[in-house]
Length: 82
Image (tube, rainbow, N blue to C red; front, side, top):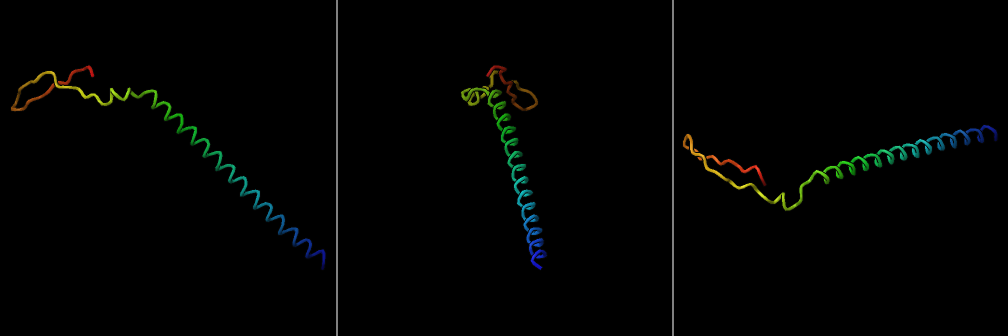
């Protein structure tokens, strides 16, 4: 009878160990995914920072340089330089 109880306890312990190891592996996998997502987002932000104009250029707005009358509307042609 003792051997049966001992074998049952070992079986339960093996199942618990397997469950714990599976949980640990799942956590490591999720952590690796989060690291990869962070690196991806970092690369995106770095690329956006390189492409951005200086803040002063973002505030500047093109001014109308010439009025063209036609069809009852006044149209403004924007200057090409900002």
